[in-house]
Length: 456
Image 1 (cartoon, rainbow, N blue to C red):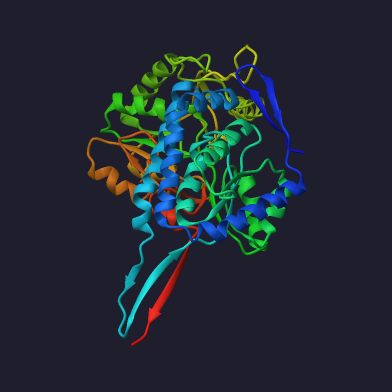
Image 2: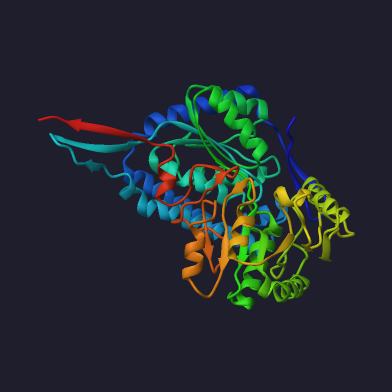
């Protein structure tokens, strides 16, 4: 059975265990969320705006305490944890400001009479969230859908029970209608039952391919809509005219921020032959300068991995590559200390026979490939089952704009590290999932676009 517990990855110590929900508690939560939907969908848009603004204000007010929680839960360095809170605040404020406009009726031109599209909430949503960005991932689902008039059942990752509890408390303190947002410490079996319940109209999952496939299969049996944000193996293409210093600095942040534990992190560095050797040497030097240490220290750039399990998975991938001839320029092993500490790692000489070539690397391991021209770079970038994001580095903007149209991804960043913003739709294609979060698109996934036609 799933155990909800805070296991500090910096020490390996279990600090607190939370009780898993009973079946009766799960039924009561669904009842409450469904009852709340009846009132929330009829609420004034101004009421929803006010709630989102109060939630944003409480996140900002509790920034320090919230950051400490996730540093303890999953090892995120404190400065990065505070940055995550800032993004969350921006998301709630974005939908408070823009949501009313997105909900306005849309007129349709007709030959006779008039028509419009009216936007209405659908019901109770189940959110299944991961551990790597405990607050941000939740906000991406919750903010737009509360604005839509939907209600939320939130099942967080088992290693994030304290942050899950803190978020539910924020909604209570913000004066949310009872049942509008509920945290549930559910088992996988209970999740299946929740999805099957006819009062639950959709599911949003951010997580692994395995989890996404399992949830989509259950949802499909019950004709429920699903939004899936899954893995990524994002290419970071460095063309022959790139600014080398900029490319290296953005590569460092894009790969090693959050200890490399981001679905849209830069994971495969595809470098033109003209810059390959210089880029490789400069990236190695930059990695050597990474400040690792206590995630609670303000100057720490990289802390531990999120768990012992995550470390073992990553190390097995690296060891497989080494055994088959990949070159380790730096790192390649766990650190000799308690907790889930893994050395920042740089690999070259990776070939298609190695696991690393096909699998997602969810940790502080960078792989650099040499290519002869941009055509080869595009082919290698697309040679993956994933299609989340990509980065292109070039001083001639016409080239990356053209190449962006050739990449099989949902997002492309030109001359900047991968990231996120409230106004920018987020999502991928292929085995990276389907659907979009954030921006206007984030309000369109779980909403009834009702056509209203008026005759003459």
